[in-house]
Each structure stands twice: as C-alpha cells, then as structure tokens.
Image (cartoon, rainbow, N blue to C red):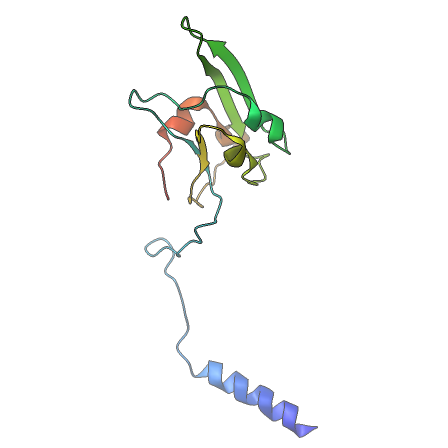
Length: 136
C-alpha cells in the first residue's frame, strides 16, 4: 500500500529538482517533423510562373472543398490557372492536393505560424502562393 506512494514521490522529486526544459519561443523555434504539413505554396518555373497545369485534380480530391480553380488556355494550347484560390480557414491540411498533383506544383511547407485577424486574410490567391516564403 505504501510502496506505490513512495514510487510516485520518488518520481515527483526526480522531476522537481531537474532543470526545466523551456523554449524561448519568438527567439528560438522548435524543430519540426519532416512530415509536418504547414501552409501551402506554389513551385515556380524559371519565368516565375506556377508549375500548375490546371488539371483540376487538387480540386477534385480536396475533402473540404476549399480550392477554387479557374482554367484558362494559352494560344499554344497549354492550360494554366487563371484564378487559383485556397481558403486556408476551411482547409484541414490533409495533403491530398500535394499528393494528387502530377507536376508537384502545390506543396505544403513547414510553416506553422499562420495567424490572421480576418477571414479574408486566410484566402490564399495564386499571387500569395507564388510569393509565399518557402520553409522546408
């Protein structure tokens, strides 16, 4: 009856006298798992345009229906996204869009700091996705 109490007290005292592990957040950042799925970004080609070929697979596979795609066609017959928008407030960060993309145009980075004041700031347009800082 007293043995479990003493074991618990020993464990408590062990941690009581040990040095605490504290991360000073703004200055120090935690290491992130390589499997972390953070904020979206677009891969670019040499011209600075998205690699997206507007196939629509990301839109079809998205479980939360947060991706909007408007397909346009160039004079040479190649397709490109005229309007590409992700509503990050609705996104569940499942990574299906990244897995479904045949040209690896859309990626999920390692950024975990995405806080905004209004819902409109969570709408990621094509321009925001191209200019997003690539972390990871």
